[in-house]
Amino acid sequence: MQKAYEQDEGYNLYKQQYAKQAVQLHDIQQALDDHTIILNYYHTDTAVYGLAVTDNDFMLREIRIDSAYKTTVGAFIGEVYRLEEGRRYEGFSHSALLYQTLVQPFATLTDAAKNWVVIPDGDLFYLPFEALAYHSSERDYVLWHHAVSYHYSFALLLGQHTPPKKSASKNVLAFAPFSSADSAIQATGMPVLPLSGEEVEATGTQVFFGPSATKKLFLQKIAHTPVVHLATHASIGTDSSSNWIQFYPASSAEGDRLYVHDVYNLDLHNAELVVLSACETAGGVNAGGEGLLSLSRAFLYAGADGIVSTLWKTEDRVTAYLMQRMYHYLRQNRSPQWALHQAKKDLLQDPKMGSQYKTPNYWANFIYVGKLPETQPASNWWWLVAAGGLMAIMIVYRKKLRLLKRSFLR
Image (tube, rainbow, N blue to C red; front, side):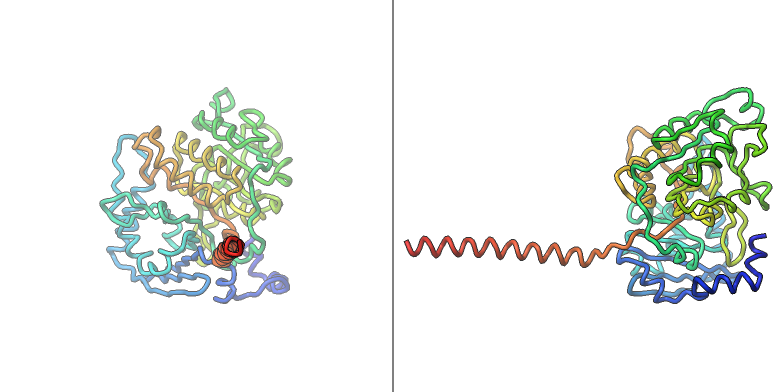
């Protein structure tokens, strides 16, 4: 219905009052700082067209689609999306080939950028770019060198005009309806998520477990909460009836599932961050030219600044670890993009976490979609530091010169 409405002539006339219809290169570059690059991919039947944009440069490349490319993409997705205990991850060679194909053509720009914002298309919506490896024989992931976030289109990205707000020390509304078992939970046939309780406890303030974690309470509190965290089950499908987030089973009129069409009708303009810590909340139907019509995108459309969601099914222990570390950094006033990035690095460096949890199929499913990192004129900052240092040297030099003159006169 929303897509049909947007095709109406009246909607286009309304939209023209507030925004330009075309996004120009100049508009994109003005929105970037000198640490950030946007990698935009457009998928056709025969080629992928890649556009890399920084604050002062851009590159356009054509990547031909052949049988080898299709095999590599399919093989990597098959490996990274598979969670089987005791099964060895075999995706390194495929991820290295994808890095060489999709990123290496832009290396002169990507290597210098700390922050990557990826706008994918087609099958690339399902790729975690931070899990791509520089070499097939090493675990030298993109993650070690760059913080990767995602978006759906240039227009949507630049439409979020204001800089991201800081989420540290903010009121967090957190739900864990499946943290323990009872008869109502067992009746759903869905597994208990015992570590989801620990996960939401790390968030801080308003935390609701089991029977108190209802959809009704969520709808009452959502409009005035800056950070929302949902640690539960979810489902994706081809239409809104099979795309939902599960709350505690209830017999009320509101029901116990938040469907994707419910999310579009919410007012989330006070939400700085929504964390969808459930399976496949970043997945959905790929609408050509529009991106994925997912739960994550629905929350963004409803007004949230940014979304943390998942590309594939999650592992309970890894999820709890990543979320606890992410909130640790959010409380230090770091951006959600950087906080999630650093949480993944902590997981890989933590000797207490078993090596079986350190392959990308366990940690690379969590992604951040949202506003650009706040623009920071780093080069100007360094000039100020240098100028301050020169002034300090001059002051010290003048003092010493005066002392020498006095001693000479004596």
